[in-house]
Amino acid sequence: MKKSILMAILLVAIGAGGAIGYLKYTRSSGQTEVTAATEFCVEHQIAEADCPWCDPAIVEERGECPEHGVPEALCAQCNPALVAGFKAERDWCAGHGVPESQCELCKAGHLPPGEEA
Image 1 (tube, rainbow, N blue to C red):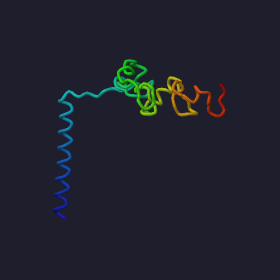
Image 2: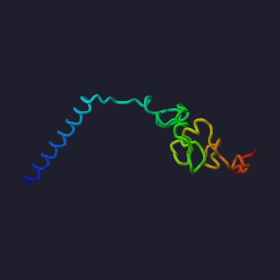
Image 3: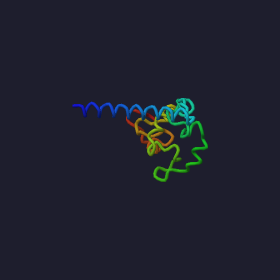
Image 4: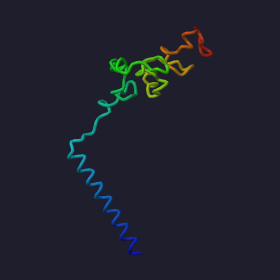
């Protein structure tokens, strides 16, 4: 019984020491809390560094998606995180699950049921 109590006290002390060390390190190393506005594009719901709508240079930098024939930075099939951005831009074909601007089925006249040309 005494060993269990001593072990529990020892583990709590080690955990507290680790927490104190972590807090001292993060405060002394100059790390600061980054706000969502500087790191996240709220309008397009994606990391600011990856937002092709806010930084069009990203589209040119990443080139073309070899699998889908669209710009890699705008390939929602390879990067589902882009879907919210396409929807925010009102560029989404819900019937086919791809951006309207990239929907080859709609361009070929194969509209989803209930849609007219």
